[in-house]
Image (tube, rainbow over all chains, first blue to last red):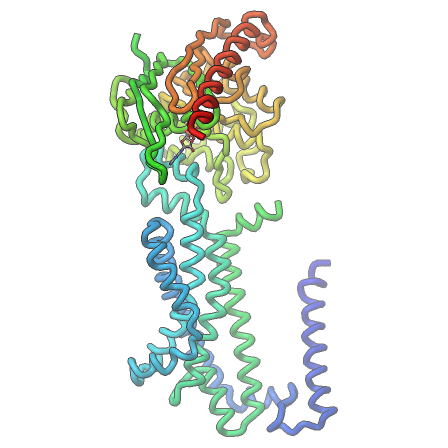
Length: 255
Length: 266
Ligand SMILES: Nc1ncnc2c1ncn2[C@@H]1O[C@H](COP(=O)(O)OP(=O)(O)O)[C@@H](O)[C@H]1O
Ligand SMILES: [Mg+2]
């Protein structure tokens, strides 16, 4: 019964969607420069196969690099804010303010500061756009730790480091992974934003842009599909990590 | 006779926005080795503060606490604690929750030895067969049993219990009283139990200390004159009924003092 829910239903839905799209283009007799049909896409993938592989890799590694930076810096910031009330009061308004800035406006700013550093700028944007949820979740996880949790180890003379690794860190993991799912999606957006906007960019975003300039609409739609697939892969990679490191939280909610 | 736990003239106040809040005032409590002291008092009078002072999690403004004659200045590994909230770690099994203190106190102890020790306790409290479960899979009473095991797994000299049975239903609570008595017979420890249940204080305690309203001092000390080998029925014995009547009267006085003060303040 389970395979029906896990495979049959989603695959059928996907097939219906593709058919509907194909039918829409066919009924309206839209030419390829208005809207590409799914049947146009395999040709686009085959024709530009090498580019797809190369550009997908570019987009993927920069997104993952930006996300990794977010995890490091976000966790560190979250720890500082979680353990020190003064740091929390000082940093929180700054972070909220920074997070409120639409990140598209930062692209030219970054591009001007680090001219021509396309890899660096892309990773930086992926990082800037995605560290906020991680920092907030870690800080909330730590600052809401019930005092008794601290006391059971502190009363034995445990150090702050032990307290962090044995209690605070594992207890924060479910919230951390919740934030990481959001952050992964955001980092992906950040990477593509820079790739699309930069004049001599690389990655799937740049491929999308080149499809636009050359009027190659099937290529543009093929890139969109590739982006969707990569986005899904990144998301499920995070889910997998969550299962491994915080699977206990899932069990305790259902059980 | 000097006790294993000596609380000597402890005075403590918390700084608050409205100025210092005096919580304990010249408190004296002495508990001989392997004896069981129950502490009762009006809520908010400073009982939990007292446990934190004995555990070395907090230093008093004046006076001090001595364990085995040594002044308590910081937490020490010869103390075990359990609270009303069992605070078990959901990402660990029951067995690994019980083992936790050994990881801190005896880092060199082997896994085998730790498991043997934890299993021995789990069996004593009737949790054998549940060691591989997660805390959320257990009932409240079973979690509290696991929490007790964790509090004594490292063979502490002093066991501090802050209303450990407060959230349990009456039947489960009486079961756990019996469990605690059995544990004491198997491995002796000196106990400081905070409770708001007078029957619990009489059934478990060798002495019952009644604290006054805030700021708390020792208002009354009751020597529990019952045989060590107690059954729950003993609470219906005339001696118990008399002791309970005395304690109830003392609590009324303690509460009266705090309500009188509140009336003056407002
Ligand atoms: N960290 C703290 N800062 C300020 N006031 C506190 C703090 N902890 C406890 N109090 C106050 O001290 C009084 C005694 O607290 P507590 O020892 O928890 O009482 P009890 O356990 O007897 O109910 C209460 O009025 C409580 O509000
Ligand atoms: Mg209390």
